[in-house]
Image (cartoon, rainbow, N blue to C red; front, side, top):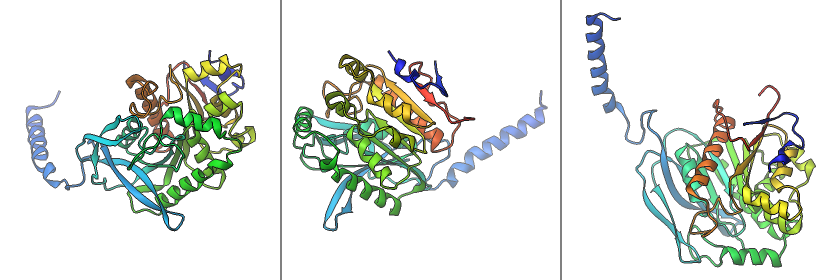
Length: 359
C-alpha cells in the first residue's frame, strides 16, 4: 500500500553503603531545601519541572491600512485551564476546548508557529492540535482567512458548511491560484506582525504550517522570501490533485527547499487516489522531491478533514487516537528541528524518512 515511498528510496529509512551521620545530614539538607525553595518562586514563573498549559486569546492585527485580520493565539502558560467554548459553527455545533483564556505568558522566549487553515476551515478549526502545541511550549498563530465560505470564525458568524465549501471550489477551481492570492497577503501580514510583536517569542525559531490550501498559502509566503525554520503540511493539495489532477507546485519548487519538512496524509486519501488511477497522493510527490530531512507521515484511516475539530467536520473529524498520533509526531518533529532535541520523530512502520547525510 505504501510502496510510493520507495520510488526514490536512496537515503530513505523505514521504521519499521553510607554512614548514619551522613544520612542524617542528608535528610536535614533535603528538609531545609524543601521548606525554603518554594518561597523563592515568582508569581508568574514556575519551577523547570512544571509543565506548561494552554493559554488562549484572540487579537486583531493591521491589514491593508484600514482593514484588520482576526488571529487566534494559543501559547504556553502556567495558569490553570478550564473548559472553553470557542464559537458556534454553521451547523449549530460549538467548537469546544480546554484552555486558560487571556492567561499570563511564561517569562522566557518560545518558538512560534504560524498556521494557515484550509479553505473555509477558520482560525479555530483545529483547536485540539493547537492546544496540544501550546502545552508543548509553542506559540501558535492562526488567522481567519477571508474565504468566501467559512464554516467557523474566531469571532462572529460563519456562513457555510464543508459541503458548501466543496461546491464553491468545484464552481471556482483553484487553477493557478490567482483567485486565492488574498490568502498569501494575509499570512504575510501575520508573519510580519509576529516578527515585530512583543510576545515572548524566539524570533529566530518560526515554523510555518498549513492544511490543504493552507499548505499552498504558507509555501507561497516562503516563495515570496520568508524562510521558516521548518514546515509541516496537513494533506496539502490533495483535493486539487484528486479532483483536478493538478499540482500546487512542481518538482523544482520542492527541490529548492532547504529546511526540514513533514508531509501528513490520510490513509483514506491514499485509497481515493489509487481508486482514481492517480497512483499516489500528492504528499508522495512533495516528499519524493523535497531534500532531507523530510518525512512522509500516514494518518491511519484519515481523510482530508481528520485534522479538524468535531464541530467543524462532523462525520469526518479525527478520532482521539488519530489526533494523538498526529500531535505526537508533529511535536517530535518540531522538538528535533526547532528546539534541537535528540528526539525520534516517528517509529511507525508505514512512515518514511529522508535524512540529511550524517543525520
